[in-house]
Length: 254
Image (cartoon, rainbow, N blue to C red; front, side):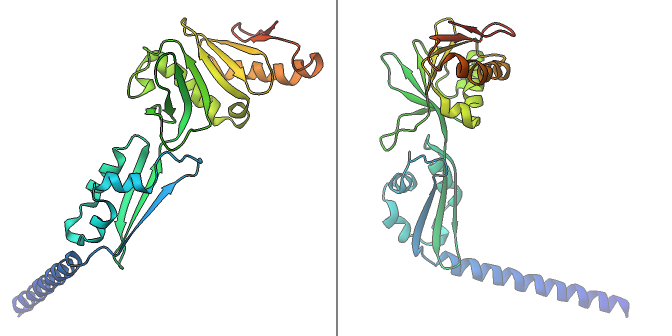
C-alpha cells in the first residue's frame, strides 16, 4: 500500500513541476512579446561632475538611440550587453539597466570622479580619477580639481597612474589631498619637478610649499598645519615666500 502512496506522491510532484514549467514558459513568452514603453536615464552627479549626458548614454547603447529601444521587445534586449556598452565610456564607472513590470527601462549611470587635472607641456590636458584611471578632457564639463603641472609625464601609464612606482606615489598624494576637506580646498596646484620632487601651490597664501618626494605624506601635512596655525598668525600670512617640509622634524621658512 505504501508503494502506491509513494507513486502517487511522486506523480503529484512531477505534475506540479510540469505545470510550473508551463507557467514560466508562458510568462516568458508574454514578456518577450512586450515592448519598451519609455526609457529613463539617471546619471549620478553627487560630486557635481557633468562629463556625460543622456544623449551620450543613448549613443553608447545604439546609434539609433531611444527610438530603437522603444521599438524593441523585451526578448530582443540583452541588458548586460547594454551595461557593458555604457561602461566602455571612460567617464562611466558603473551602469545598471533594468525593466519594470510596466515596461519602462531605467538606466542608472555612475560617473568616474576626477581628483586632479594634469597639465603637460605641448600636450592636451587630462584627468586622474579617484581610482587612478587616466581620463581625457570632456567637451561637456571642466572639473574643479587640483591642477598638476608636469614637464614630462613619461612616468605616467596611459591607462592608470598607479601602474608605475612613481605614479603610485603621486596618486597617494593626490588621494590624500582629495579626501581631506581642508587640504582639498587649500591646495590649488601641484608641480612635479624633473627630479620627481613636489611643490604645492596654496589657494590663499603666497608661499611655495617645498614638499619633496611624495612620501611620509601624513607627517608632512601635519607640519604644514603647524605652519598655518602656529607660525603664520604671528609672523603674517605673506611674510614668507616658501616653506620647506622635506627635512625630518623641521619646518624651514624663507
